[in-house]
Length: 340
Image 1 (cartoon, rainbow, N blue to C red):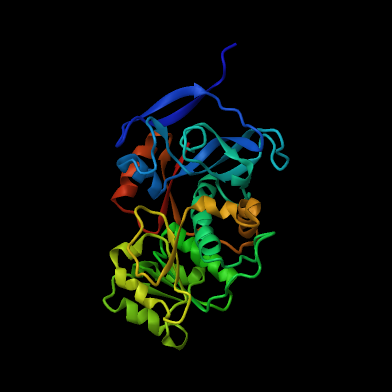
Image 2: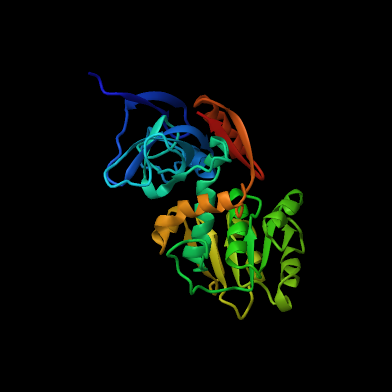
């Protein structure tokens, strides 16, 4: 009997094109699950890999780090999932574990049961932005997260934090996580003006026009005693384009920056303490095995919202290529998803 096959949407080489390839259906190993994808989300890292070769070791390659679907099989030692469970998950960087395919394999801690209130498309939009924001806050800045079981409880409690790129999916996730962790803190954000109302609805104290010529002074004036922020979360690599943004850091504060890896790190002043993070580092922290379960619980409790609008751009693998072109050209305050 021939082995069961699964389809992969493979990028043949740098810059494309894509092809649909039939491969043997993968089986989960110990502490892994296999997921039959129902929806995937597109992320900046996907187009950067495709068009620049960033983080790519060889071609052809399956892309995709976000998705939602149905558990197909579970590996040895997996007790929290069974075949047929509807889940959403973070996915990996190689062709066995990426999401742009019919069936993919992930560590069980990367997945969580999908809240029934969410569609597969909505759920697919959530994992990497939440994990990356969480890594910036918890792994880089060491701020404790009260919603994370078995996490630390003795982290710093800054009085003022700013999120650069607040309208990005990571930025909007960071605002929500910060508000959960620091209920009384001043949480500021930068974005285009059309997103300001949304960011305050997520928990930001105030949002600022990222292109304002008086941005630095305006931010400082909104902080306690007008002395500046204690910490920065750079969700989109803003520091690379506006190096004077670090002047918003309080002179007598920790001057800590959690910077999301979006490409080569920005140049920073010598007295700034920067940590560059990836979403997967969230799982390496105390309580890391509960990261995705905690997200599911927050969603069910209504304490965490979809960070940005979800735009379903089509059905089938072929919609992914066009979507990546759209994402590369620039998308603001929106997550592109594809039904597969």
